[in-house]
Length: 166
Image (tube, rainbow, N blue to C red; front, side, top):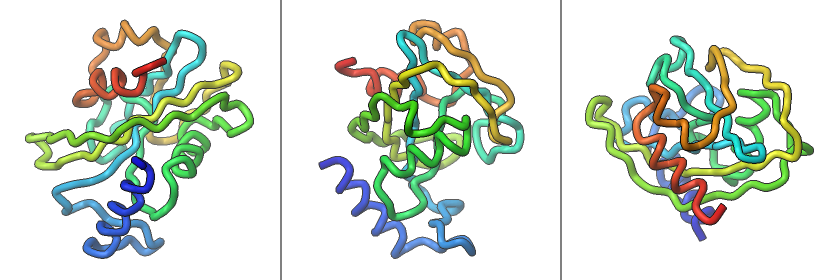
């Protein structure tokens, strides 16, 4: 399965890359990095988040919830952790979590290949969003409106994959 492939990939990265003091994998100087891109959906809308100028990459671009897969644990656990940390959404408000097939995205400017793991999380109720330091604002939009925003690289492609069969 896709999830077990990702876990195996994380084990490989963990064996060859340095670690931060807290044990997380440090992708700073790695040419490749696995990440999750989590689209939060309520009815027909998705949540867009504007990245702050304090984040490492894609400062002030629109994105969604995202994070490095820097610990050897199931993607679902990482998704729940990022939802709690970045927007204060908890498992009891989640209707479904669908993890889609990963793909590689080369960002020439950064000299980094992202291994993108698209995820779609459908909510039971529209939550009150509380942002952490990584974002400065948020908007609920219809997926067709995404092109109106200055987004991170290939967010439209990732969204298309996440929404497949929805």
